[in-house]
Image (cartoon, rainbow, N blue to C red; front, side):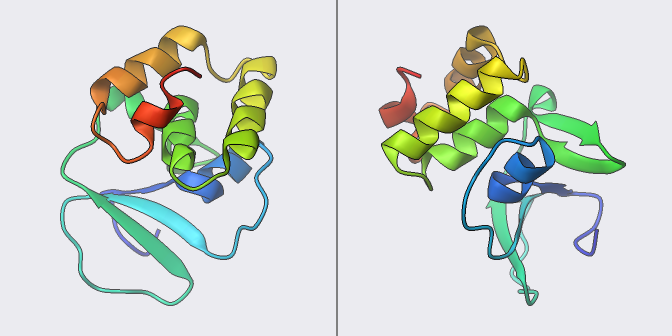
Length: 120
């Protein structure tokens, strides 16, 4: 990836890689551990101070957020209905369990959108 070893595919781009249906993928979305102020055309960067080991996976040769973390990230971007559909699809495909969803929420209780999605 053009952003280095600290970057993971995330949000809608990760959902696409996990084959969780999400509409409107306009740009590649990456989560970058640490600070990065440089922009890159066609890439949206989300910076986090740290990312729990359970929230990282390797898929198709790339680092990507886990399905549970991907859903957490989507929680702040999608409508309630679209989010519920994404969760249902991920659970039906056995990508994520309820315990994994609760664990990722516990690791990020103040994250934007987490409280609203806590009942997933």
